[in-house]
Amino acid sequence: MYKFFTHLLLAGSLLLAPFVALANPFDLSIVSNDIVLQFSKQLFVPGDVVRIYATIQNLTSVDTLGRVVFYQVNVSTGQEIVIGTPQVLSSKGTGLSEQVFVDALVPDGAFRFAVEVFLDSVTDVNLNNNKAYTGLFTPNPDFDHDGDPDVTDPDDDNDGLPDTSEPPLGTNPSNPDSDGDGIVDGADNCPVIPNPGQEDFDGDHIGNACDEDNDNDGLTDTKENQIGTDPLNPDTDGDGIKDGADNCPLFINANQQDTDGDGVGDVCDATPAGSGGSGGGSGSGGGSGSGGGSGSRRFRIWRGFRIRRRFRIRRRVESDYGRRAEWGIEQFCIVQ
Image (cartoon, rainbow, N blue to C red; front, side, top):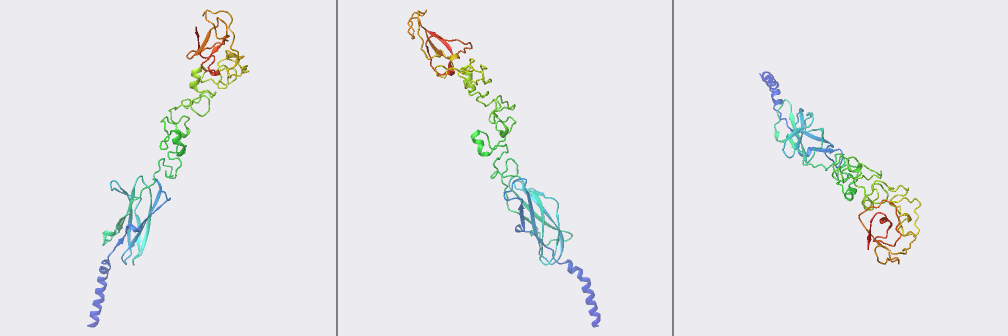
């Protein structure tokens, strides 16, 4: 009788053993502190690679298989987007842990990640510890998307001009084409004035649209328009001397002779020898001239008319300017 009951007890134990094993609880756990992010560089920017490590804890003594899913969380909408493919998990029992990871790209704007654990074939007895979220991360701004954050990038808009040099030029350090003409500021010969053709008459790397001296003759275009020289011809009279250095820019005088040293060449100087002139004989005006002659006439320079013929005034001339740049290019009016 004793043996019979002993054998019956052993048989019952063998029959019940599978049910006892199946009754063991399964519990895989992940918490926020078990998720670690490793960025490709300290000052990460959108587009950088980030590696997400997740350490999964097996809280039971039973070995089990499972899957780990990583998500990128849209902070604005709460939408969770799966990153890559689920990672296979083979977890040993007795409280051991296992680490898995995936690589992701840093998105634009603030972000966070989530990790979720799933058991295969069996049920997790505690679903409250199966999903965890990281804290909130904000990437460093990178305006030109060159991988260098704006805080360390010397040229935020990548236009070829350092940020520090753009304000003095009037360009925008956050706009690669400040004047909108299709040429980036660093390559634009007039970065604040639209000139898509990049015309540069004198080849001085300053475009015609913003060059104050288009023929590079030493006279501004404005001045040349005033005195009658050609702003697109550095040597208007063709005597081999640039207009800005020519003491008679409208009259040929290659030797630049200036007898009286007044800065006005002899060929366009009313008094090349420095003499005031002596008026002899009577003039039609009837009055006495300043040169001593009773008929001398007095001339006074007025703006507005360009004289293009060479001539010589033999009487004393009273000038409002007295500089060479004004001779030969103004209107002469007879004052009785």
